[in-house]
Length: 115
Image: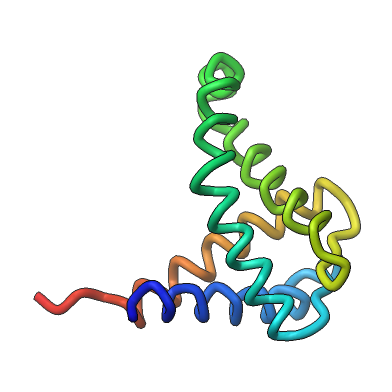
């Protein structure tokens, strides 16, 4: 149940993103659900491989290259769906940052564990 709620939260945050960043366009809630699923899969499978492969660059940039990797994951997801567009790679880095922050904030409030 917790996994499904997290998935729905991420989809809702994706629907909120075009209101916060004008360079992001998403068609409907179903597209947001599919993009949230693909982002989760990309972050679980592809992102760790990219982090390992780019470890020297990440260390030299003091971790700032991770923003580029997050933007790349967002950009890849936007290329997989016609109903989800980002106007440029720079905007995908900004969108990934805003998406992560808003999703984290909402999830920490709604999905907090009972002590």
